[in-house]
Figure (cartoon, rainbow, N blue to C red):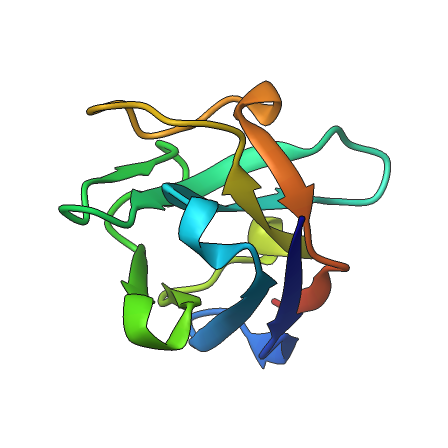
Length: 127
């Protein structure tokens, strides 16, 4: 059992930046990867970024590559999402989630790759 709590969402203008945080507790030793996903009203949940705890390999969706950066502080059991050059289409509820199992090199990127989820934090980008 892993518990995840997101924070850092808010309202920003296009071109602005936000930094999201996700604190993990519980069986954190079992977490091999963490990810960020988002869901806009009326749309399906989509993958944003993920990171492996060991080695720090990352994977990004094409829509955020070059603008968002995922990072982690393993000692604090916390993962971050630095979001720069925000666009109105980035508006969504952002969720952090833990990978479901172990992979030697694979960075999870499918919805089914993730198990525990946080409650979400709202990010709104105005034009």
